[in-house]
Image (cartoon, rainbow over all chains, first blue to last red; front, side, top):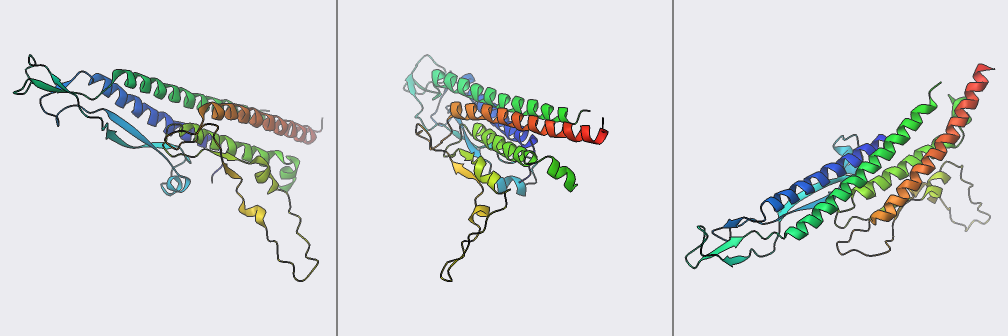
Length: 143
Length: 129
């Protein structure tokens, strides 16, 4: 295992990247929260990111300079049923006057956005502390 | 550079272990939201003990088994036992990790200070003033 404080930058970097993707999916969910569709298949389904830990051997085999960390394994559709709403005035409504709305709950998304943002900040702090220690180490060799 | 290696004492090895520990904690924090991720911790004492020459166990009777060197097999990594279990099997408790990371950073600085003092004494000796 290579030993250097800059591994922490790599680990923090993977986490920042993963949390950023999570925030992007949340933004996409929020933007599509009010959409309606004519059929159940076409309706927007909330996107969820699934994280996965990066293992040591995975990283070293890939020749990566950092060890460990996290990545977005996959982005999956929310399995909640799509709500069928009676809205005869909607041009997309079917013969019975029903439309299909996105299965996104704005409140849940906001909470998820806040959680992602807090995780992002945590990892920024981790990188900041590592940077300070690195600068301290440099002081030693100063004459 | 054997002279310089000894001059720095245990501190350069300690710094490496401190760094390894910070890395591990950074990894825990990075995997805060990963399902089934198990937080790990480094046992500082176990890792540092590897740098000390091990005292071989004396076999005073021919029926005694060879004890071997168990110490070298232990990488000092331990799984953390969480205070509260989470539904997705993740054992990272972010507040605990944050606190440990802060403490680890302070420990790292302490070792750095020891190292700095050593370097200063070597410098003083070399200059001869």
